[in-house]
Structures are given as C-alpha cells and as structure tokens.
Image (cartoon, rainbow, N blue to C red):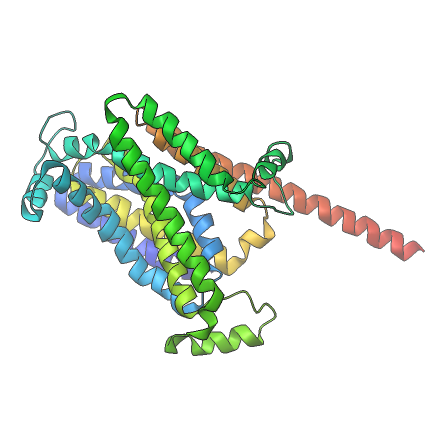
Length: 370
C-alpha cells in the first residue's frame, strides 16, 4: 500500500534530486532536499484538509486533483505565481521577469527577483492569511458533535451562533493587522478584503452547485453516480458541477497553503529552478500522495481529532502569515507548528480509540455475565 501510494513521489524525488545535482552540483542538491522537507513539514495540515474534501469526490475528480491539480501546484503556484507577483510589482513583462528570476541575486539587494518578491510579502500574506483564517473560523464556529479541545472549542462554537460571526471576527482581525502594518495599511486592507471575497465567493458557489449538482453529471462520472447511489453512503460522493466547484475550492485552498512555503523558500535560496524542484516536484507530490493515503486508509474517520488538529494548524498558519506583515517570524516556527498540532491530535485520537475500545470491552463482559 505504501509503495503503491508513494511510488510516484519517491521516483519523482529521485529525478528532481538528480536534476538539481546536474544543475548546480552538491549545493543545489542539498538545497533542493531541504526545500522538499520544508514543504512537507509545512503541509501536513494541508494534506488532512485536502483528504477530507477529496473523499467527497468521485474517482474521476480525484484523478483530476492528482493530475491537473499537480500541474497547477507545481507550475502555477511555485513558478508562475512568483513570476507574476514580481512582474506586476516591478512592472516587467513576462520575458523580463523570467530573465530577472534566472539571475543570481540576494534578497536584500534592491532590484533582484528575491528582493521584489519579498517586497510583495504584505499583499501575499494578507490575502493568504485572511483566506486561511476564514477557513479556520468557519470550522470552529460550526456546531459539531465531537470536540478535541473541549474547554476551548465549545465556547468558540457558541460564538458561531451569531449570524456572520466568521466574517465579523475576520474583518476585525484584518482591521487590527492593517492598523499595525504602518506604511502598508492600504495594501494590506485591499489584499485582505480580496482574500475574504475569494473565500466567500468560492464557498458560495460550492453551496450553490451542491443544491442541484446531481442534475448535471459529467459523462465520466456515470459509473461513479451508479456506485454512489448503490453504496451505503449516498452522500459520500459529489459529481458534475458540484464536484467541479469542489475541485476549484480544493485548488484555492491548496494555493493558499503554498504561500508560506514560497515565501519561506526565499530565505533558503532565490533560484527559481531549485525552488520549483524542491517545493514543486518533491514537496507538492508528497503532499498529494499523503492526501491519497489518508483517503484510502480512512485515517480521518479512524482518528477523529485529526480534522481539529489540522484546522488549529491552519489558524496558527493564518495568524503567522498576518503577523509577518509587521514582525518577522522564524521559518522553524512556521514549519513545526503544523506538525505539532497534527501529532497532538493524532495522539489524542489514539487515546480516545483505546478508551472507547476498553469501554466497549467492559460493556461486553458485563452483558455476558448477566
């Protein structure tokens, strides 16, 4: 099961490392490996959230996420997105932006690719931070039967009874961050509002198509519809327009998660080729393999607190992105905080499962003695 799921990731990792070595020698190979580890460590929460959404999709759309989605992740977010940001910021055409990117330059030297991308950090952090913050708030404000951190999650859920609670809290957070951003106030406000609008637009469209998604089904999903209707859980899979909107929603979430990795990568190297190999090919492929592994193993249903841990990690990442607009945060903190939340949630799930098993065993013994 492991090699079936992670086989392609391992093969592509080997190829990426060889290419990095041929491109820049041992130094490039080491940097590429470090970036791959950085991306995976930053993306445990991403994989959990992706898995929860992916398990609702039909096999056809799952394959779309793993094929078309990986192209968007590697080339869109790790190559095109930084080039686009630099091009807009420095008012360069695409050829000039690529030429600048291929030049060696220090992130502290004005006019270099890394410097220009660093200068665009307030916009990137405000947009991605607000999008992820809304994702965190909507999960925490939702009325759930299972809570991980009962002492904290239950009071937070009560706030969610207020209409528009997530929007109100998110807007207050944006106003606070923008006020602390000094000369970037207007930029942060505009980018943050864009993040809010993007989140609400994507989720609203998803809700819209969830209503009548079954009425318009892709030809490729015919078998999936039959299997869904015949299966024990009719609501398990979505198809047609609903699945397409879920796919778009998944891609936007995936893109938002990649912001911290792209920004953090420039603290290690400004070479776009090494970044594409490390973050894109190695990191993005392993995140997708991990997502598929979680879906196929039913891990999220077995370890019920993983969802909660992932969303706490999302909230922490959103807070870090917003804080870094005004204050520098060490990349080690950003990289480890998600792992800590996921690991803590996993261990809590294991203890819960053991406790439930012991209770069921005791009840069975009691029933047998009667």
